[in-house]
Amino acid sequence: MNHYNITNRIINICLIVLLAFVTINCNNSKKEPSNKKQATEQKAKTVREEPKLVYDDRGNIIERHSKSYSKRDESVKSIESYYYVYDEQNNVIDETKESYTPDKQLKYKNVNIYTYDDKNQKIEQHFYSYDSKDSLQRDTKTTMEYNDLGYSVKEQTYFEDGSIKGIIIRDPDEKGALRSEEYIHYNPDGTKKDHKKYYYTEYGLGKTEDLMKKK
Image 1: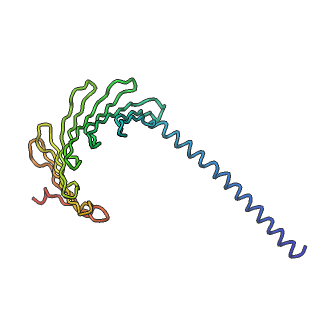
Image 2: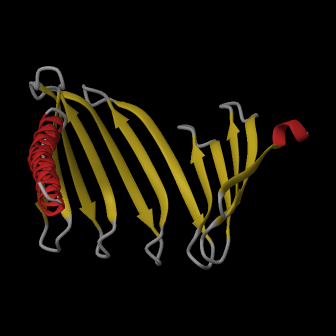
């Protein structure tokens, strides 16, 4: 056998091996999306169905209904409904969440009432929580303040009797990036519970100061 024939045989063998390799890879690649899709569908099916939405004539969502399922047997675990009320500027002023058992018995209800200033900035949030008998269990309030650029600079939360529960003081730069945040928490009797300040860099948290220990 001359050199030319040997070379041709080697080339032919290489082509056969290469063709077999490509065929195997193609078959595997065709199977992967199908398996992946099935796994995704199964996971989604056992967690939560696509919510049902109701809109008003301005395109705002006024109702949202969904069900969550047990991963084990796909039975209904809970039913949740949300209801929204808007002002003339399309700001949410009333947000209600109702959670039900699989047999549609109320478990709890949470209501948030929001107040806005003339710049459509949220300046107050009033939170109410009700039990399965629709009895009020919690009543708290949060107020917000902003600088001239519209960035949040202060938040205060209150106990049910109106005394201050916590304060957050923020120091944003001219682009809104936080330079620092100061957290102060109080006990129900008005004494300070803790007081910390966090300093940030462009990469994240830089350092933390415990201002309670400094005193």
